[in-house]
Length: 306
Image (cartoon, rainbow, N blue to C red):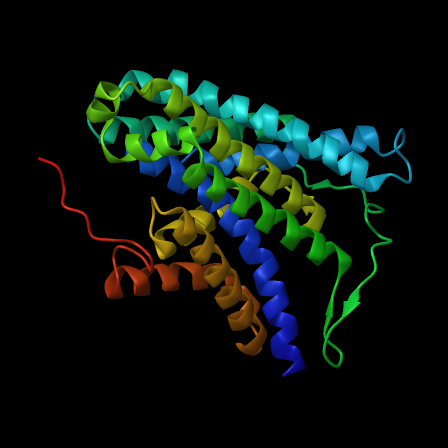
């Protein structure tokens, strides 16, 4: 039982990372019906920019780890959000009426460019986050030998606050109402006085910004990364979005946590060699959900417009 609870905590932590990145996929799909394949690499750039900033702030802010991380997170959200807006303007907006295939190819091209830039910036080497960050956070004992580390608690609280904040923004504000209107019909939204281009730009800022801060959290949790992180982690987050119901914000969150827990439990209880199958578990789960429920756990079947 103790092992199960400990693995559950680990799965929830990893699932929170998947959920944050999945929100970017699901938001873009909601307003444009486009899979933003560059999103995973923007997440990776969040990890890279976060590493560079923290390396520069560790000495000046010695003993103030949380302040350094807060400053880094705010800057990363702004930088990666701006990258998302730039990619939308350059790679997606000109192809918005070109059918569905052209934007997908453009998205893949943007992903390859971002990955190549990261490879050159890191010289294809593994980068390591400062090792002494947050080392003094106390663990919280739960049941028996089960404990919640201070780092895991910080990660979970941050992820949950960001997800709840996004959901409240979309559901409770005028801009959020406009986003939901644009996701239903662009032309009718324009007739109602909504600036569709501005809403799409905002979505391309918020989604990558969340992915960027997710990248910082992943870097702090795993302590090291390389330029391929965006492809591997981004693909799993995309699977999480499909699992929960792509285009559905609560579905992306649920899919992220489900994937994190299933992946962690399968690795923990799969016996010797199970860790070697860790990445395959996500794809097996994807196949199962596409066969059993193609719209995802919280997805709804919607009639296709003609």
